[in-house]
Image (tube, rainbow, N blue to C red; front, side, top):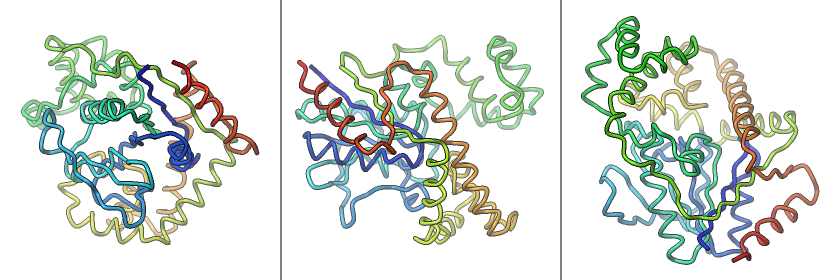
Length: 323
């Protein structure tokens, strides 16, 4: 039986460390599902867990574009994939994630390794599990350039003509966001040419989520932000800021980086930077919990329980041993 383990949960719940523990028990490959760690040079602020002293080993997947640097870092007996995939100037999206991660997962299965997909990006994980209609629609650079010159009102007219139901369903914030309006038009424009949904097929999935009481997560988040500041988060942001105009929207708006860039533009004080970064991470953790609670497939494990690791380990080993 083809099997894939997915380990998710809110930020700061210990997903990566737990997955490394499982990979010590089972021959595995870890496949990151983090929308920011795919970027090169986004290391400290994103919390990229790359083994100290480990070198990146490139791997060729002929079906993929050369703009993607697919490869892995090695733990003791484990490979870590889907980090350092693209430059910070590239707008990496869910379509790209599915396109890159599925070949990695399939290769792991072929090599008799258990793929462990680890991360908190709900969009990426849902795309792998269920397929996301928009994930099969690649960005249209020509259309985006053309629409970028349009006003909000003009974009509304275009979307109303091509996809009126989508415009009606958008909340007030999204309907005033040019980037989201343009993406909606892009999707509507491509719909007649949609190929079958690209997702994991014919696999036995175990989806587990690590959790903890909200105050525990908030405390862990705050401690992690403080640690990253001490480790040189500001220096990392300064290096990226030198090419700010060319950075992708995903990088500019990522938690931690967005607040750092605002500070470097003299829009906030250092104290405001730290406070807004922490509050943004708290909100992100809350959002992650919201989408997870809606999924009945999730098996929950509270990291504050003394025996949570043993319980989770038993669940995984029992599932893995079944043919």
